[in-house]
Length: 180
Length: 175
Image (cartoon, rainbow over all chains, first blue to last red; front, side, top):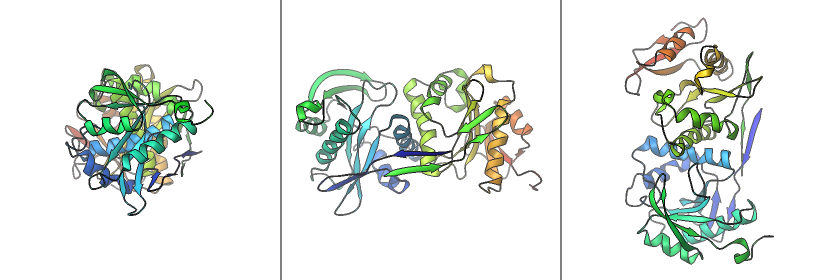
């Protein structure tokens, strides 16, 4: 029996969103073990925990049909971050998440990747609403969420991250996307 | 991009062994939430359990091999998992197994699953041997390893604390 599942390849002006590969692991590890950079995403204690998250993300694609893409910068061909839809067991509802790796800030990468991810989720996955969970004090993520049109809805206790602020994105209709 | 994994489904008298998926989730999350999961990092909450199970699934995409889910042919129940677990901090894949519920114990199901997987690793994938790391307090698994013909390997100790290495060899091979 063969098993096939699809992780699409999405494009924007400057980025490619594609399936994570083993060769992307080192760039993710560098991020995940850096407590400052990964504070809003989930810091891992060691390489083996980071590998487990990396494998878990591919499992997430298999189990849910979506997960985090590796975001690749077209001009350099390098992985520059992650963007995707995340909804493990215990999450309040599916969220759009984004991460930009060191050296790639200030280029609008997170906005471009998150907007494309959201469009894909509304158009291809058929989501009718989406959220983003942000750790209080993560000013940059709040600014990006607001730039994406998301609005603060409530604060809640996340099973993995502790207290988080839930932002709700505009609906497909608000964005003029899809049939809904 | 399409990731496709061409994994033959294995079959025994009573079991189908296949790549794990969403159908196995309820049984696995229940197992990892119980005291019976003590040698698998449990008991843990639902989120951590999902994370762990999801990583078992994702390992297949990264390595091309992993732990199969073992499903009873007659009922469709996921009775356990068996296969090579290979996180980044293990130098080699580790033949691992578990039964999801106490009601599946004592029926030879873990042995049946392990024999089929190990035979596949040796005869189809051509592995020369495979190790199992077993906690000194896990008497059930120790007994099963011995029943499977695995031998205590003191030359290559386990990277997992409080565990012994048991090494499986193809039948007839000299250790």
